[in-house]
Length: 499
Image (cartoon, rainbow, N blue to C red; front, side, top):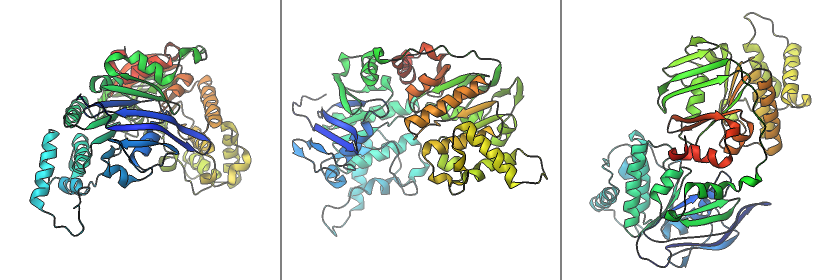
């Protein structure tokens, strides 16, 4: 770090509400030039809202944001950029069909209207920035053809060419391999060495401790703690992120599992020689951060992502090349996005459920509408949706009821194995509790159920056994009751705490 006394970025008493929900509550944070500052917090802690306020995409309800003592106008993207505050989002904002040079120059426009653009000077400037970042990238390459790590550097170079002095990097390593992440860290250290500052947002605690100079933790929209990195440890950070253990309710012992219903052993893009098995009558939670391989693992089991390796269902070796292969074997995968990969939103509930009924019927069977609706009504009752909803358009139902309709359709395939990928995302608390109760009921009846969730507490609360993944590898596999919320967060975010 440099010897600056005054902060380069000074966030003072920022608050933001959405209706009655207080997303940020009197948040203050300062970052000095030459500093990499970690911003941490569990899902829902307020990080995304704070990033939105910093970028100018959201206007705060109160408080001030200052760069070098000058207040930035609230809710103005252009004011934030002109002040040198730039957010590099997790989802990169690049033009994949344009060249590297065109992408970087998109934010480096002439200062005066109708001013001539010198291509030579433009390229010199871009080369200088890329050289600073240690990025050897041909300016003529199409951005979409570059590996993700180089696309990340192009996005950062664009921010620096636009005059960025405070860069907010939102989960920049979530999809990077370890060598790629190390290359990014080198670029970040170069950035701050040139009198700039970086706010590093990440769930990967070992990376945060390796890279940052200071750390601020948000919890429930408030600052839960701030430290110099050298003065704290992972245990202290996780405690600040999730609260005290005394707040926890005791867990009941998990149900006893039966035979192995499905198992997979192999390696694939995004998976590093994993061995994963699900037992009949058991709810298994697969926990991991974005990019850990969790979703890929479920997609392999469900036939969505064909992969080499050994797959066994009830002891018989099988190969899934398509989800239909898995369904015929009694394995049903349910995607995280019901609107894209799950339901016909423009059709009624009966049509959505009947699709699964028809798929299970033998060829040349006469389809009777009253029979299909009778079966569909039974499924609605099973998943806890009122029978009067049978003829409602699915898109008009609540998120929780949409998920239950999708679950009902999946159950019509009569699976022995049910794979639920972040299945309760976007549903309210009461709907989530109802879905959890149904999942436990299915396991009690002998089904093998595997769940993932972006909410680690949800996994801990529902799973009999938890498998933790990181960087495409399984790093822990043990009974759910053996994890508390601190140890689970540490297992998925830090290799040092995975054992």
